[in-house]
Amino acid sequence: MASDAPPRWDRRMQQRLARGEAAALGELYDRFASLVHSLAHRVLGDEDAADRVTREVFGYIWENPDAYDPKQGSLRSWVATLTQRQAVHRLRQTEAALAGDGGQEAAPAEVERKIRDASTAARADYIVTSMPAPLRDALELAYFQRRDYRQTAADLGVTADEARRRLRLGLQLLSTAHHQKPPSDGPGAGNGGPR
Image 1: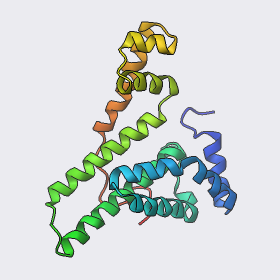
Image 2: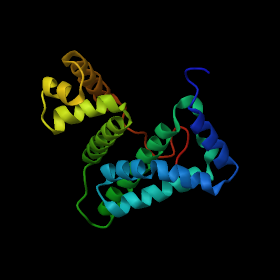
Image 3: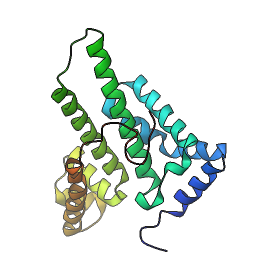
Image 4: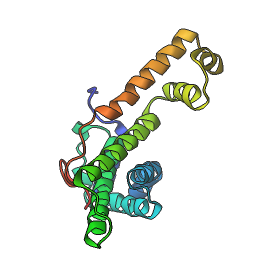
């Protein structure tokens, strides 16, 4: 199997969705709904808006299962990208509506800064939830429970060197959240997305 081939589950899921299996959409929803909702909420800061984006993303997937290109990455990454694009699209719509309704108009640079900050935070959340459990566990102990690397090593039952290695790798992964290009102008850019 090629190293760039998607996981077997991803390929089977796409095939089932393309055949119109409603049960496949249910499985996909069960697996990714919390990811989609949390990413959308992180960008939009609003529960109802995150619910709408979640429905829109899964609706788009149901109607366009062939839009997923396994050569571009995992199904999880594609779903996260769709979510980010749709959430950014909604955020821009909200800002434009506020400006059009006589609300306080945000400067375009301020809107783009909000989008960039929210997108970086959403990507960081995604990275943490997607990283291997040993790295995530080390980061959670060190940063949320304020353990030093020796205490982290003891809590995890590993050597101090191994704890340092896990922390370093976890932080390296997390740092990539800041090195992404800002999202494109709309959610439909690239390989397609909901609008």
